[in-house]
Length: 50
Image (tube, rainbow, N blue to C red; front, top):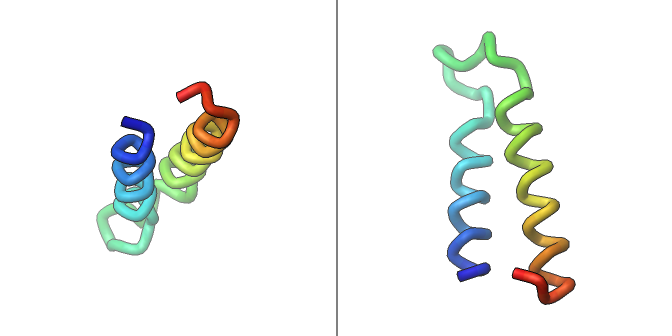
């Protein structure tokens, strides 16, 4: 379960990266928020709580 969640979060992080024209005005907020969520999930997995 933890591995699947980690893979989904990584894919969301890549998809939210503002590299496409329609998302250029978003800034780094979506990828920054997902990056923070990814770090939290990785820490929880390493601590064995997820």
